[in-house]
Length: 89
Image 1: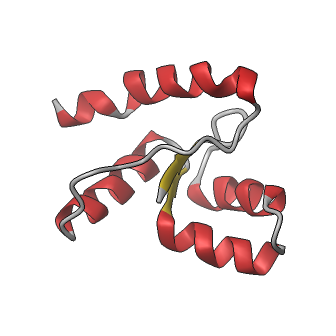
Image 2 (image 1 turned 60 degrees about the vertical axis):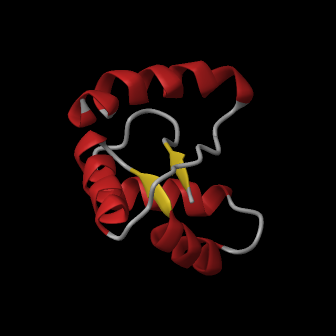
Image 3 (image 1 turned 60 degrees about the horizontal axis):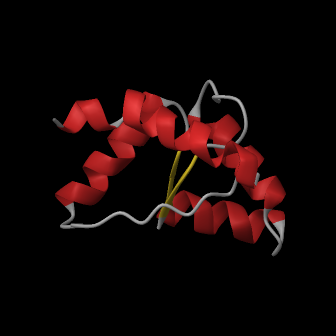
């Protein structure tokens, strides 16, 4: 499982899922299914809902695996710190 933010902040989950699946190495449909099942992506509300679902199912740890370009990683970390983490304080 990982947290993905793909490019500019997507307006909705489906847009983010589409972007992530198109970047995958193993075929769009397979990637889309895997990403939908295991990854956290989308706008802040989408990510918080997905995290809440994982937490409710007993998940204790989240691993971030960046699918962005290396130079964008810091922006994504800052986005999570600003938009997601405050929800859990």
